[in-house]
Length: 260
Image 1 (cartoon, rainbow, N blue to C red):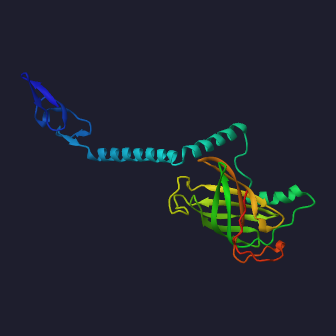
Image 2: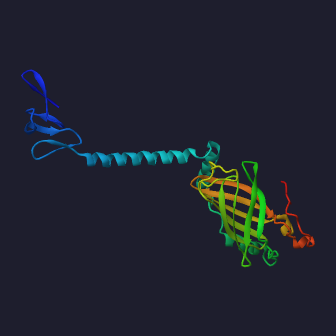
Image 3: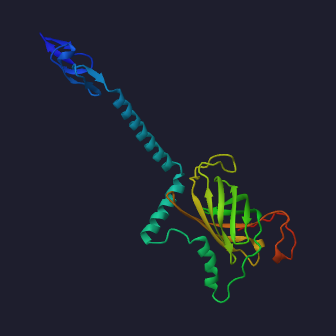
């Protein structure tokens, strides 16, 4: 600061904004981020400045993170999901699919006195298939599935979105499982896909025909903060040497494919 004396502006002591004399004892007010000491000198409050700087950087990083989350999905993908989520919220439609066990058990309840024959020979090993999104078919890379005798299934794989794990159940000619993606994991092409938000996809399906060789067909759904999405899927056993019991026990070469 400066003080007017004899028609001239004289500088106040360092850090002083207002003063009655040019020496330290004449300071009456310090600049922002300076604190007046016992001898009227102004000391720089560097701890306060450092704290405010850390807070400001944290706020900027938080805003950038929010913006990155908003633009990480393609505009079409994001807008479509948000619209579906809003539509379901306004109509009161249930957002979450039924649990794995409820979906499996409902097959018996729907059939009444004539429940369908249970699937008891679910093979463990390599499976493959495809799913649809926005009328586009996406092939599912071969993945490993473990089927336990108690009806539990588990597995893991990598597709065009990223790495994922599988957990669910089968029975009563039905299958229900959750595909959980590992966020920011690399997909089958070795890149990080914009759609991989570490989200979960719910699958619910039934036997596509009268035997396990035809695989399972059904629908998948996403219900999360990234929006609501739905599509169809078809999965089937693809392990080499596996024989469909209903097909007369002839072993498959693992190359079976389906269309439609």
